[in-house]
Length: 83
Image 1 (tube, rainbow, N blue to C red):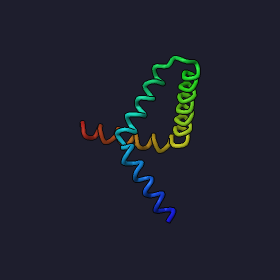
Image 2 (image 1 turned 180 degrees about the vertical axis):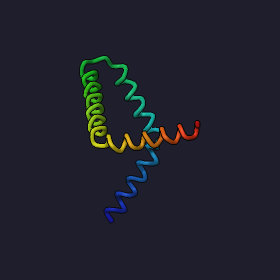
Image 3 (image 1 turned 120 degrees about the horizontal axis):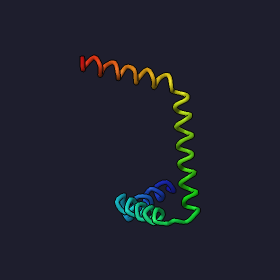
Image 4 (image 1 turned 90 degrees about the vertical axis):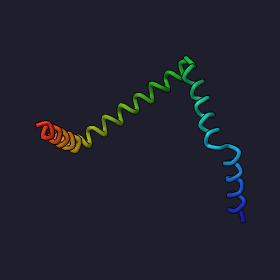
């Protein structure tokens, strides 16, 4: 019975807060954050950039051989098509 009540509540919430409204709300709040020039916001962006760079470096280190093989096969196919 509790699951049915929860399902009804979730369905009602989805009808009231459609995906368009959620996206619009998220974009509106993100726009406000991007306009803010506070130090905390800049520190947050620096942390995000640092995490992306570290994850990219780890990914490149772990899969360097596979990436090289794929790249070489792509180059070979392109050069064979152009010849």
